[in-house]
Image 1: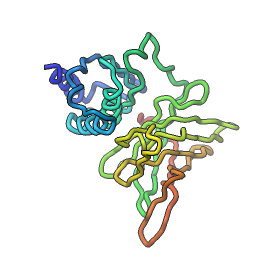
Image 2 (image 1 turned 90 degrees about the horizontal axis):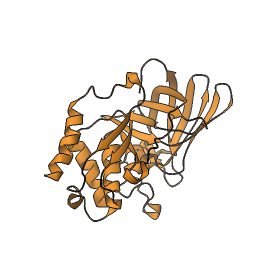
Image 3 (image 1 turned 120 degrees about the horizontal axis):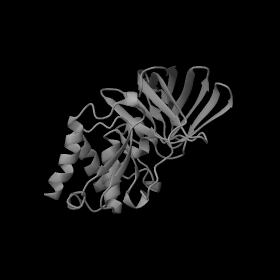
Image 4 (image 1 turned 60 degrees about the vertical axis):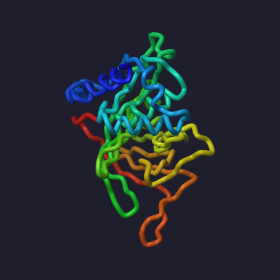
Length: 250
């Protein structure tokens, strides 16, 4: 019964496509649900728990529009692994668990910019979108990138955005995360690094870019990997060129 309650909560949210309206600002979602009935289903290790989360997200079809997610429910290490994967594949970023929610939410952003353009995957180019949401210290908060190949895949970006002069800025992600967020081992896997074309962004962990005027030019890369392209060509990064977009939220 508890298991069915868990699924019904998220299926109910998934069925309401108007629940999150980006015209009203960046979304923040709080879920209160009993997770105890799910615990026996998620496996005995991190990989099993994360695989369960990814699969369940695909089954339910929840789309949280790149929301910051707070979850109130029974906590455990494996359950957090499972729910981080579940929300990631549902376009949500699980940022706090019950014991962390003592009346404090993350700060609201002081600046939000949206960029749209193309990213190159070897010989091919695909649509890419990027939301840079910044706190007062220039740190990214609830920032995301999305690449659309057959369908759109959204990935949180953490790092900093530092400006030396007006409209001349540098974007640098943290050294882990990005594509590794999609690994069944998780982003803190250490020597279990997973780099594969089957992962979004091939599991690459780093992003850097320069903004001059309205144009943001950069790369998604990893010091441990290269891209094997056609005609024996090797690339070191996915390269993107984006332009600041006004009026259409992301």
